[in-house]
Amino acid sequence: MLLKMSFQTHQEYVYIMCCISGMGNRSSKQKARRTLSMGDDHLLCVPGEANSIDAVREEEDEHPSELPSEQNSVNNRQMGGRKPRNIARDLKDKMRFLRRRHTDSSLRDTADKLDCDKSTLVQNSGESDVRKWSDCFENLLHDKTGLEAFRKFLQTEFSDENIEFWLACEEYKTLDTSVLESRAQQIFEDYVTIQAPREVNLDSRTRLETTANVNHPDENTFDHAQKRIEALMEKDSYPRFLRSDIYQKLLKEFIKKSK
Image (tube, rainbow, N blue to C red; front, side, top):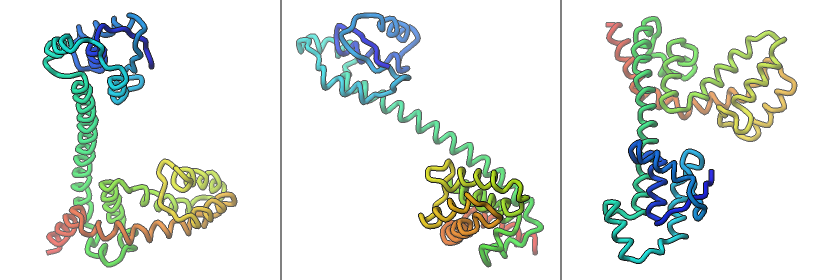
């Protein structure tokens, strides 16, 4: 949102922007917001609406302060000897740090959840021969515990849309013919169409073929696409899974219990 504002100095302009953005105490923020009703000499891009620090830096280049150098020095000293450009840069760095901290926190939460899931998998792996998972990919996919372990691994790699699509195709083939059309459309929109929310990596030929199949759905609508994704997982994700901590931990526990 663009608001017209008037300032005695360009330094005050940057200071107001910083206060509104969150760098300042409560009284300075209130003072800054009251200033929004003053004058019409400048345009300010208020953070929270446009949220652009780069716009401030461009303003500084386009509207350099016209105060005498001596007055600029006084204003710089009042601001702690820091130039407006440095303040804008510091604010941008602070916002980048906060975003990174939020992302790191989310990743830690995901990692903690996966650690709990690993413990559950170890407890439930007693009925599965974990060693057979490494014999072939099919053994892994058709073992309940193995399949769940593989899903957890793909979640750590942020590529679980592949196994979710594969499972959706497996479930689709068991449905009554009366619901095939609606379910086929849902799977197509979730995984197959361009820019789908969980789009899987299909070549253009397979994608076009699947698109045509959805118009006349039957139990084999997604067979080709499912095989392509299964082959992709077998070639790419499966070898990494066998080297992962998830599998190695399950394997050690299985061997330990077998002795």
